[in-house]
Length: 128
Image: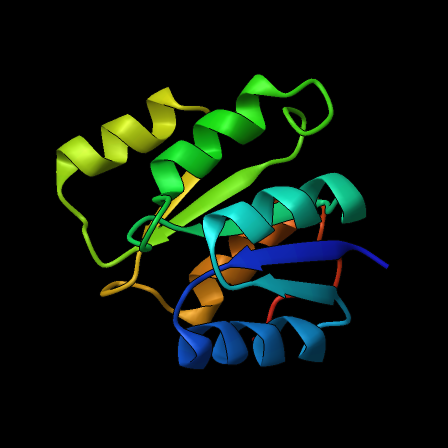
């Protein structure tokens, strides 16, 4: 069973993502901030990380930078999720090593699920 780590400070958004991913057979862990996300990533070694950009204390950019800088976690695909869909935010996310960037205002379940399929993390058939 593939494992996903959600690093998201909004409990409502994290729960929504968790329920969606669990319905598709994935094991989901949730960290409510960047520091706990780094710890959980090292402990659980997820198959992918869904990372919010705008969080208090440590933003998603710093979390991504630290994950990519560590030999233990640099192989884990990071998908950035954010309400800030400006091109500089996208470019910065990718420059730090994120493999995808999904703006929350354009976010649909289908986009996330297809991204996970392309990473071979989610292997169920796409919905018709």
